[in-house]
Structures are given as C-alpha cells and as structure tokens.
View 1: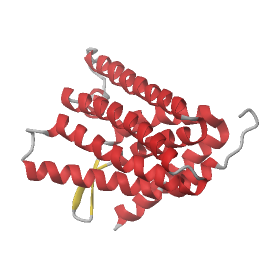
View 2 (view 1 turned 135 degrees about the vertical axis):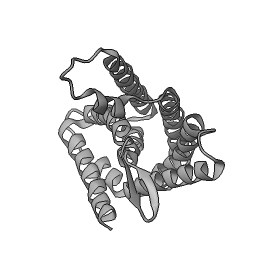
View 3 (view 1 turned 30 degrees about the horizontal axis):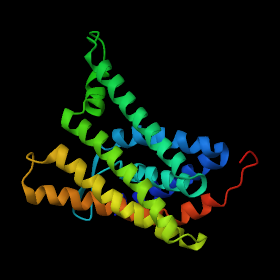
View 4 (view 1 turned 30 degrees about the vertical axis):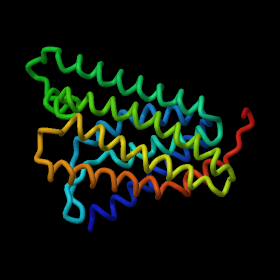
Amino acid sequence: MFNFGWGVLFVLVNFALFLICYRLFGKMGLYAWIAAAVVLANIQVVKTIGMFGFVMTLGNTMYATIYLTTDLLNEKYGEKEAKKAVWFGFFFLLMSTAIMQMVLVFHRQESDFGQEALQTIFGLAPRIALGSLTAYMVSQFLDVRIFSKLKVMYPTRSQLWIRNNGSTGVSQLVDTLVFCSIAFAGEYTWDIWWEIAITTYVLKFVISVASTPVIYIARNFKFDKE
C-alpha cells in the first residue's frame, strides 16, 4: 500500500509542478516542460516497482503529462503550436540519447564510480531506444491530429474533457503497441508481452484521465503578452 499512497502523491506533485511551470513561464513553460518530461520519463523507466500484484515501470506519470501539454497547446494556441512542441520534444529526446551514448564510450579513469550507474540509466539497448523514439513521434502527432478533429466535432469549452481524453486514449494505445512491439516482441512470450502492454496502457490512461481537472485549470490562466 505504500507504493500506491506514494504514487498518488507523486502524480499530484507532477501535476502541481506542471501548473506552476505554465503559470510562471507561459507558453514557453510548456515547451520547457516537454523537454524535461521526455528526458526524465526515459530515466525513470529504468526503475520498476510493484503495485497490486503487478510489476510496473516508473516514467508513465511524466510521460502522460506530455499528452497533457500538447493538448493544452492545441486547445489554447492551435494545432501548429502543438506540432511544434512535438518536434521540440523529439529533438531533446534524440539529443539526450545521442549525447549520453557518446558519454558512455569514453574510457573511464581508475577511480571513477559513475560509469556503472550511467550505463544502467542511459545504456539503452538499440531496440528500446528505437521503440521510444518511434512511439513518441507516431503517438504524439496522432494525438494532435485527433484532438484537432474532436475540437471541430465537440467545440464547446465544457467539452474539453472529450477532446482531451478521446485523443489521449487512442494515441496512448498506439504508443504502447508501437513501443512494446519494437522493444519487446520476440523477447518475451506473448502472454507476458500482453501483460506488459496492457498494464502500461491502463496506467498511462488512468493518469491522463486524472489530469482532466489540470487541463481545465491551466486553460483559464491568462497572460498579458498573450
């Protein structure tokens, strides 16, 4: 039960920091959040925890806030800004992956104590790195597109929850299937593969649904320069 209680607090802290970032820095704060989120999510995913009898990876909360961010940008600033944010996040994900892979190649000094830790965190297998990059690009652009379509079908301010959860629900399913297929297909038996995929998707989607009040709060923020 400790992990569940701590996990709820962890989610709330993530949402609170997201709102603070946007409140302090406006639209640029959303771009900064995406840059931080894509890097931190890929660091956190190294750690596994147990909850309700399932083994889960961290990173799902931070990763879910990326959808929250692009949906907010789409809602307030339009599809063009949301797509720009997706490319922004992709660049930081690619940049951090490339730089840290190069860091690991350096020959360590005899007294060095950080190589093993860095190897564990950043030494992503090629399939996992490819899966992460591909899933991010496919699912994020899909999310932006679906949100824009739903914005036409359900345009009122009170229907934001339909736009947000509808686009996120579909795009996160695609994200999970693409990532698990590239990273894990053939590595596990199909029953284990499906368990990983289902638990990952359910956790991400539950967090995204929980973020619905957050996007309503953030939408009401006003900025003089905007």
